[in-house]
Length: 137
Figure 1 (cartoon, rainbow, N blue to C red):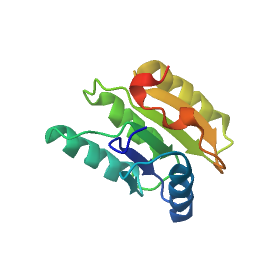
Figure 2 (cartoon, rainbow, N blue to C red):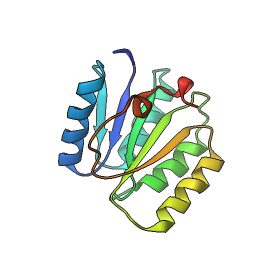
Figure 3 (cartoon, rainbow, N blue to C red):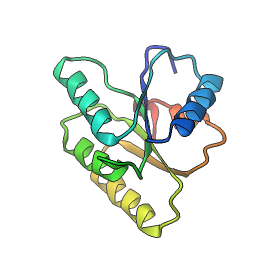
Figure 4 (cartoon, rainbow, N blue to C red):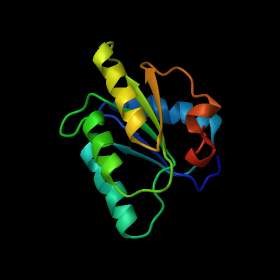
């Protein structure tokens, strides 16, 4: 991953964001990691970037349980945007509810973006977690 690629962390827990940034710094050299405390703020950023012809993130780490707009609502709205670029979306959650896993499977079938599902705490970032979307399988 080059330093020009963009990563979004969407999570309402400042400790998780801090930890994710530290883990990412161990495996990549990027200067652009943006964090958002809910899906609405991240979606607004993506829509603004699309409108202004700017690059959108190649990789997103997405919590599903957040106020205002949760991860599932964010995914729904993201799927409705006209985005050709394939984004790698790492869903990270502390939920053990099987319904969340079923929703992940549902969204996998509805989008061309690459979706992964991991449970918190994330203790290590592996290369596949940050492989930018055009190389994800």
